[in-house]
Image (cartoon, rainbow, N blue to C red; front, side, top):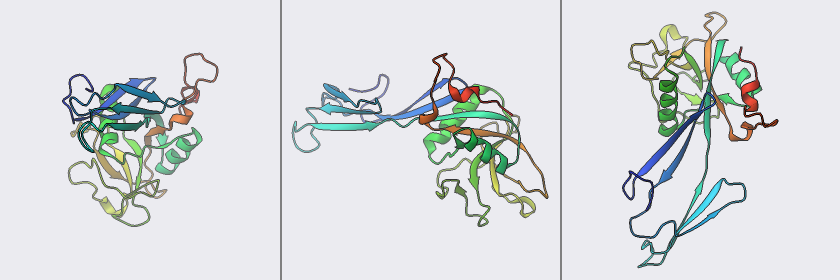
Length: 220
């Protein structure tokens, strides 16, 4: 009736690690006794699956139900170096990705799990800023901030110059992958590493040597 170790109706998240990155996908456990999984159809590209539940009662007794799931891959990597926020954004795009957009609780949780698996990390830029309007934090996609992982008393815009979000380094007292607002301005130079988000379309191994193309690109 679903995923081993979970009860019917529960939601879960799978987190998978490899090649210095993390991938997360969402799934929902189906109702008990509705014979979910008796029929399954997978799309040609492997990214969409339809799961039949012939005895589902959602529309009447044993009327049946089909659930369609779309695979959405979220992959992140740490890029070491000394980047301003603007430089980090440009570098991420040059690599075929972007500064990490952690715009859901699932993605926040996945990033924390990834960092904990790494063991230690420097401050990391992410794709979040209020540079246009103070206090109006937005992702580089233009989406307004909702779910967040700000550290205690953050963001505080110290000296009126902190307009770019970082994940605090592992040695910080919070030790939980929480966020801080930081400066990134020629008048107050501050540089660090960043968290790269890689779309699924770039996760290719063109020469079949077992190394993703993205991993061949030099780290500054």
